[in-house]
View 1 (tube, rainbow, N blue to C red):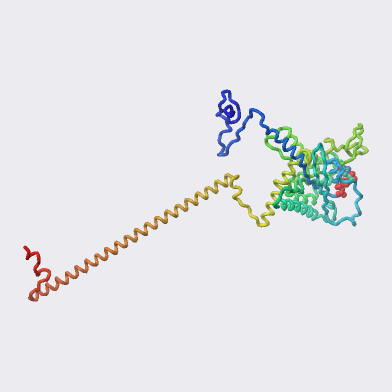
View 2 (cartoon, rainbow, N blue to C red):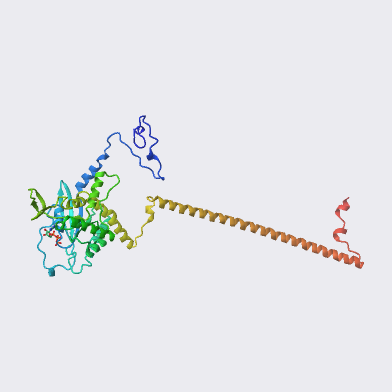
Length: 437
Ligand SMILES: Nc1nc2c(ncn2[C@@H]2O[C@H](COP(=O)(O)OP(=O)(O)OP(=O)(O)O)[C@@H](O)[C@H]2O)c(=O)[nH]1
């Protein structure tokens, strides 16, 4: 079967491979992707359906946090977003003196189902935020709550049995900005600055029906410039290279509406032309929640629920939680083992190989030096020994000559004094040799 394919999967007329395939050109040693066309149905096109079936069976967990001053319409918007009365109608607020003096954190959980898909939704409310005379530390209990959720996840990850990990981490934080029409307040900036590395921030302009279209546009511009000025990172809908134009256009359109100017209402009203819509009725007309010309509610729902809920969960897990976890473990003195990354980082691997090679060369050089020194020492020792031997022989010969000279001196003296010279035993004695001949 494979004989009739080229490496890029094109079937050539004569059944041979297409050698001019650019995908085979080595790319700095990194193997290129080889594309294959199939001759028949294999079955992996069903993978998305498998994932879908499994996910539907398991259901989904999503935790959204709502932060903003009292009365900005947080509960109403959550009810409107998930089309349910998650928050029952509220009692009027007690007098200021009787209200708690700190920001409280309250969660409401609900299992909701749409077309057979189950979602366990948790909404974390933060009553009291921004409601005090001094709101300097309003962000603190919220950061602590987000971090304690990370802590609980880390603790579950570190357990021996990790089969039942419950993800209570906050996946998105809707931050409600008061529709003042000016720019961000100190408390807004402080909150976003403290939270943007820990949670996916989605800023919304509350009760946008209280402003005109132009006021909303100007306000958005000022908010965005404040956000950019303070280097605050807000969640952006991601786009991928291989996505179709429609998806990219949708992501761009959603991004263009941030901060979302929203209107919330869980009531159905009748429009002048007789339609029943979710909205707010005014003497001058009806503001429709689900009408994109009236507000950005639809785009917010698209971002939070319809299109990017999974991206929000993924970004929380892969980036925000991962960064927090790294910082936490480093602060606890747990060091990162860099060798873990050597397989996935070719540059680091090459560097490591170079260091090893250099070390090997240095070792060889040291060994050669040692052998050389040893040989020199041996040669020196031999030379010294033969020098000593020569010296000894020289001394011996010198002594012998001295003795000979002394003997001759004595003979000479005797001759001069007229005494007969006693022949030397060695020279006068009869030699056996003479007698025999
Ligand atoms: N004009 C207008 N009013 C709204 C909007 N959303 C909610 N409201 C009204 O504002 C009031 C407060 O709304 P809530 O949803 O209770 O506000 P909240 O932010 O949850 O208030 P707290 O629970 O006190 O923090 C209610 O009377 C709502 O009907 C909106 O988009 N526009």
